[in-house]
Length: 112
Picture (cartoon, rainbow, N blue to C red):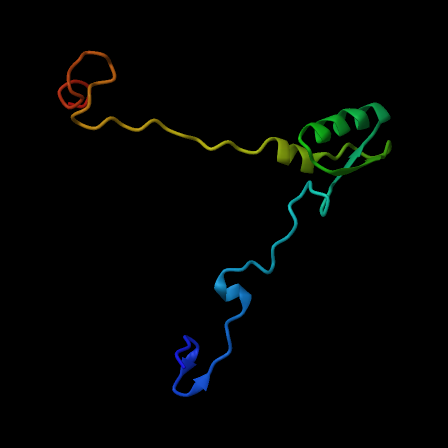
């Protein structure tokens, strides 16, 4: 029998899921039905504002009104203000036309 888990006549057990790349410890994504955001606000008017922001982004949240405590919408603001990927323009190759518009090659103009 040619099994990749067969060595010198001994059958070795198959590796666990974690060794084969299957993520067994994955947690639910915040803002989903399985893990709704826990937000607290101070007034009913603010609750409707926050609920509109949550609905606009198609998220799920449990919003409570606690007038004696400060507003806590950190989880929501963290999801709404995700950092954007920074992209930089590629530097022109030596023999490309110069981006300054002179018509010369980059190596003879701005790249010198």
